Amino acid sequence: MLKDNIKSIRKSKGLSQEELAIKLNVVRQTISKWEQGLSVPDSELLVALSDALDTPVNTLLGENIPEEKTDSLKEIAEKLEIINLQLAQRKERGRKFLHWILISMCVILVAIFIVIATLGNTYMEWDYNDPELAILGVGIHSFVWIFVRIAPIVFIGSMIGIGLTRKKH
Picture 1 (cartoon, rainbow, N blue to C red):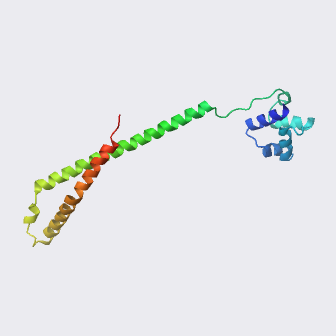
Picture 2 (cartoon, rainbow, N blue to C red):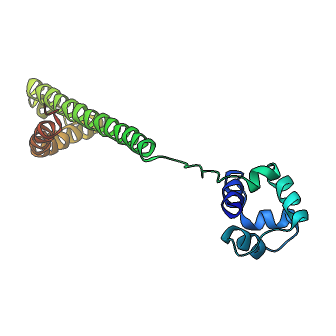
Picture 3 (tube, rainbow, N blue to C red):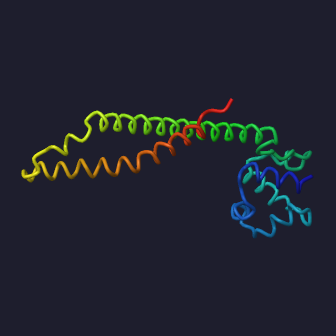
């Protein structure tokens, strides 16, 4: 009884054996022996122990005090459920974000393609003797050349990504 009560009250107060030993001016092994039932405190130490644990002596000598369970299995399951729900919500937000980025990329690619198709090759008719127009024309031509070759690959990849990130019911 006494050994169990010393241990459970000490733990409920958040004290280690070492901390309690310092308060009582004894070595840690003395506290360990009391909690193992190998020895008992004398009357003076019992009163000092009562003061250190802020617990009446009769409580120390009384019936077993049940150890507080910090978390029951049900509480742990509830906490895990909340964490899993938060992770699922974060994953869903990431999926939606990626989905809309891919849709936006497809729309932008189509818009650029429409602009290029509408303008045609009008830049080819410019007067390339003017250095500024020549640089601009070469820049536009380079962009169109790269865009026409890369955009279809990016578009197809984006369409596949949209299909993979759509919400499945």
